[in-house]
Length: 318
Image (cartoon, rainbow, N blue to C red; front, side, top):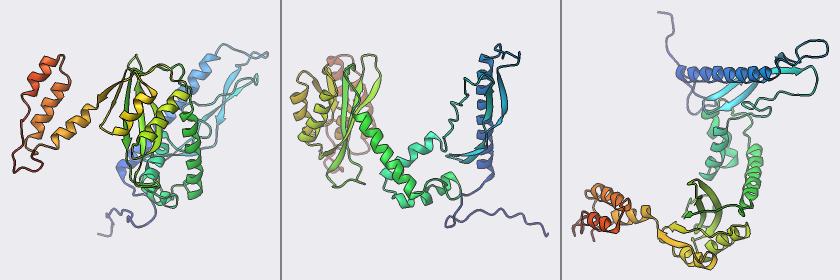
C-alpha cells in the first residue's frame, strides 16, 4: 500500500520537457543508430589505409580513444554522443566525421524549424520558451542573441543565393505565384514573389524568391529583370500562374517569346467556389480528367459532365 505507482508529468506551465517512456525509447534508439553509423564510418576510413605501414612497420592509421561527448539537439530531445578519435602516425591525414561534423550542435530538422517559427510570428525572445518541449529543458544555445545571429546568417545566405549565376541554366517551364503570409511584413499589401523553374530534364528548381507589393506589375518586372541580369539568356517556353494581372503585364516586357498558361489549380478552385459543396467532389474529379485529357475533343466531351449550373438557392450559386 505504501508503494507510489503514480506517474507524474511536468505541468505545461513549468520549464522542462514532458518525459514519457516512448520518447525515451525513440531517443535511445536514435542514439544507438547514430553511434553505429559513426562506427561504420570510422571502420570504412581505417580500411582505406589498412595496408599502409610506418617506417617502423606499425599500422599507419589507428584508433586513439574518443573525443569528448557532446550533446546534439534533435526533434525528440537531446542526444549525447562521442566520436572515435583516429590517429595518423604519419601526421598527414585527419579523420572528420561527415555524419557528425565537429561543430554540429543541432540537427537539420531543428535548423529548418527556426526560420519557420520566426516566419509564423515567434519573436526572438520567445524562442527558448517555444522550443523547450521540442528540444528539452531550457533549450540550450537558443537565446535571443543566438536567434538574432541566425537571422543575419539567413539574410546573408539568401543574398548569396539570389545572386547566383543563371547563364548555364535553361528552364522550359516557369511556375509563378505570390504568397501572402500576413506576418513580419511592413505592410499588409506586401507578399513574397516565388518563381520555380523546370529544366529540360524535368528537374524543378527554386529560381527566385523576393518581396513584392500586391503582386504588382513593377514588382514582377523587377524580379524578372533580376533573372536576366543573373544571366538567364534562354527564354522559358511557358509560364504558368494565376490570374494576377501584374505578372502577365510584366512578362512580355522581359521574356517576349514566353507563352502563357493559367494555373489549373487556381482555375479549379475558382470553378468549385461557384458550386455548392454537394457538387464539388464530382466537379473536381471531372476537372482533373479534363486537365489530363490528350486531345481537345476529349476535353469538350469531359466538359459536358460538369454541373452546368448551381441551384439558385445554394451558397455560391451562379
